[in-house]
Image (cartoon, rainbow, N blue to C red; front, side):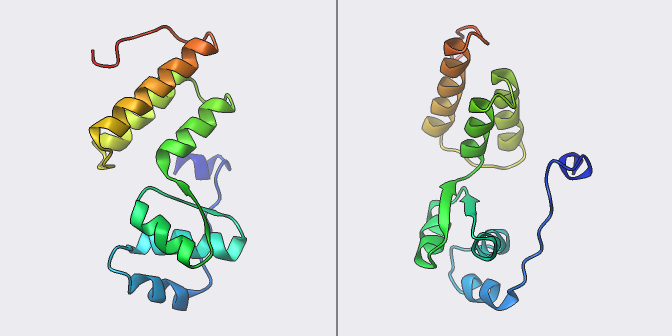
Length: 130
């Protein structure tokens, strides 16, 4: 909400409710994913979706896709928009709020963030297990 209020993000309302309903016929698609896929198609953009099955469905509808939240966090980190410790905090908050990441993916995400911070001189090495 804060990013929207500050003008950093814009809310887009999809125009094609029929396509949303069509996507919802796929058992692995939820409304938010369907709206994301339709918005990407309408805007000729990329659907950023965490769920692999939803990405597969999006591809079947010729919608470009990218892996979800972790992709965005890494992108912001690479662009220098956030620091490594902020990236770690965001991941922790996402997981606490219900985002599921398997343990290997979570560990790899933290390792990647820390390695990036070290390579850029913005962090210090830490043991990802402790």
